[in-house]
Length: 135
Image (cartoon, rainbow, N blue to C red):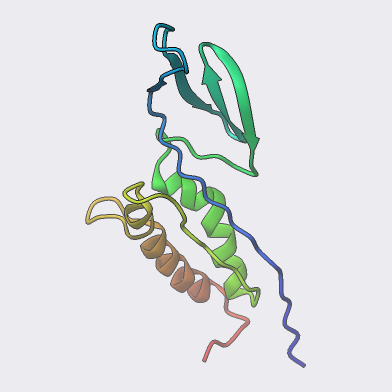
């Protein structure tokens, strides 16, 4: 008897550009408000003149300093391995134009993206599992 297990997986990706930006206030003579973003492993914070004004919490936040390989190992690899075991999984890249979605998913000749790493892991997992026949 074949039993198939289904798991609903939602993957939310936030592309964060830690850019510095100035916004003008309503009064032309007033100093502009300086806004920037700070990120840690689980949240991002909007900083307004040194004070945190807004915070957003997520399951995981990847900063610009982290590599595609770290993102793959932390988020995608467990999904890839579970799909070979019969579970459903989705990896979804979402973000503004020119934020790095294609590079993150496809990579380059020297830095593999999520898709090449996933394909490699699918075949490696199939090779290592001897008790199941894949047709």
